[in-house]
Amino acid sequence: PEGAYQHPDHVHAARSAIAAVERTGVPAKLYLTAMRRSDWRKIFDALREAGEDVPEWEMTEEEERQLRESEARITTEVDILPVLDRKRAALLTHASQITDSWFSKIPSHVVEAAFGRETFIRARNETQASVPETDLFAGLR
Image (cartoon, rainbow, N blue to C red; front, side):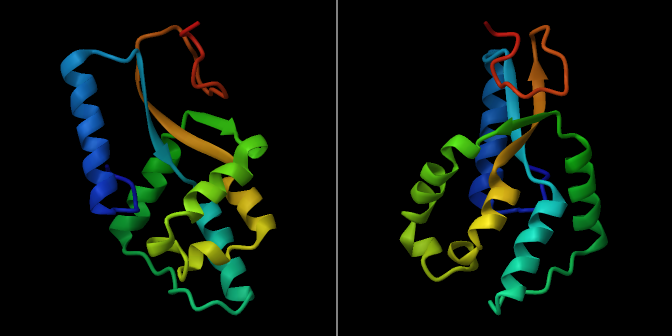
């Protein structure tokens, strides 16, 4: 919920998940999604290079601080290249939100570089799994 991308639905979903875990103690591990600033930079640079009209990425000092702090807290990185095409196809079905947006225009090689791995902040851990992690199920088996 403190990430740089403050979409109200995403913030609310994160807060709800955290509250549920705090109240129930379930599950043994909780992950929050996080994305590296360098990956966002790759995306916007490639889109500009392709002539797409994307906003300049000017962030306030507060947004920069949030992104740095979020990135520094990343504990887990999972390779999703084997399923990336299916994930992208599923995302692109949100036509009303994506069809005319910059998201649908990201070059394939940049999609792989920026989205071929997913990064997370492990916010709760009741297992013996150490960090950094590459397996969300580490310590649960």
